[in-house]
Image 1 (tube, helix red, strand yellow):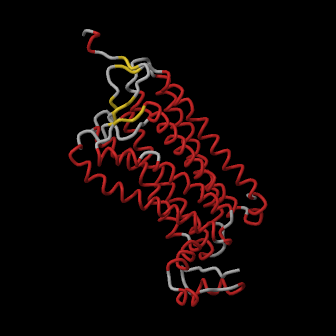
Image 2 (image 1 turned 60 degrees about the vertical axis):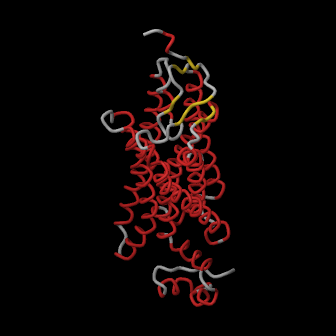
Length: 342
């Protein structure tokens, strides 16, 4: 074939995002659940941040990690969905080369950070259940801040090679990305050089970074379950398990779609392209949408604060407790726990 039909973009000014190839006619309809999920994610995570900030009783390691998760979820979904919706609604498919690489960097960076936050939350649950008397001395505010900083640095440094390698490749034949956002594998496939380094490094991130995170979480929960089942009474075991259910649900929501998306991209050659793209989009939207719902439903302290925010003062005051009455009120109100004003 003649080289006259081949254009080399050593540094293309723009890329073209196709959205969901094969489902272009349904883009407007697809945007409805996507935009709904994004609105729920934004509102839910902002409510979590507001509740933790304004409720002094929630100023502890578990809720600080939950705030980190909320900020990461907001950043992860916001880095992709606005551009995605502009494709679906206005057919605005062009994205600047630098903007594309920036989007690619941040969405993978926030994804690695979120994985690390789940590890930190598993550590918090491990210390709280296996070493309850030392929890406040082990996970001090300073330690929590250092963990948060370490997670940010880890995410930024691990994903930096993605950006550096993608910027150096020459791009050939086309600048069209068959995706709704600048995903690493989709961008690298456009390069006309040998990109095995990028592919191998991407696999390393999946297996060694997230894989190690999952192993650490599994080991933590093995120790947690051993401690729980050694408790003397059934009620004590159930209460200890309840403190972990929110975290376990959030972990499953994050890791299962993420692993499925990564594996289908690499090994699912017979899977339709539009299915790949839909799974990848759901991976970025489902966890930020469900996490505030999971923690809002399963965490009694957040339930109580929400009730105080959204119910009539007269009704709320009926349930308010103070000082030593808090535990009694929690039992009388069932799953509802409200904390008194200082």
